[in-house]
Image (cartoon, rainbow, N blue to C red; front, side):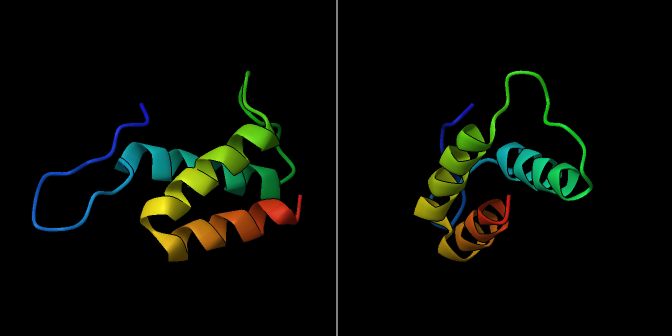
Length: 69
């Protein structure tokens, strides 16, 4: 699940599914909902750092949102 997408002209990037799941988890946290089973804030921080490695702007946004929780 954590392999990078390398096809096309662009630079390597995190799969769309991972980015969408992160966005959904952050939205749910913001709404006061619980995380999915087996998911922790620490795990989300790891995914945010992983996203930061390939897309610094989006990674910073996710890390900042998790810093508030």
